[in-house]
Image 1 (spheres, rainbow, N blue to C red):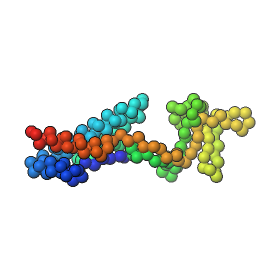
Image 2 (image 1 turned 135 degrees about the horizontal axis):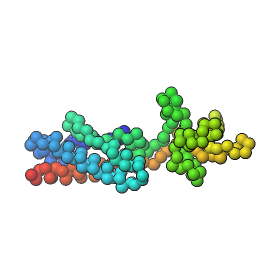
Image 3 (image 1 turned 60 degrees about the vertical axis):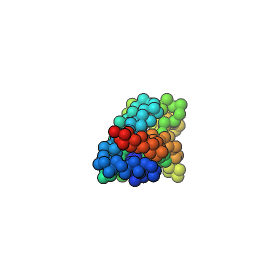
Image 4 (image 1 turned 90 degrees about the horizontal axis):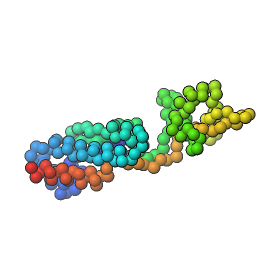
Length: 190
């Protein structure tokens, strides 16, 4: 899960003065919810702007706003939210955690780039698919049999990926502060 917390005590001095006036008027909750809602809309728009067939739409649908004591949390509950926001390695869960021991990464140009390995195996049947694992490197391949012991490689099997670059979808902290200042001005002008 990736989250962005919004609180009144984390802003610039000018913003803190405006926030103090809002608190003095008893409109803190309303202000925080409006501010959080705008940040949520920005994060959703950032996800949808990334395109794709399904992934980023699912990410956008997972973004919610949650009220806390004196703060609002805008969070994405999608399983890949933190990975996309911050980057890093993707690791296989392992059989003990109820997952797979290896990640199956489609080989470019193999014709299975958009086919999950499970569907690939089911379509050819387990008895017709071959895989090989090198225990020393902890890497392997999955594919279809060729002559002899050769394998027509379709997927690389790895324990973890190389570090992935982040693809942030939450607005920057500066953008969030600017939105908060805008909302404060709107609320104080009424």
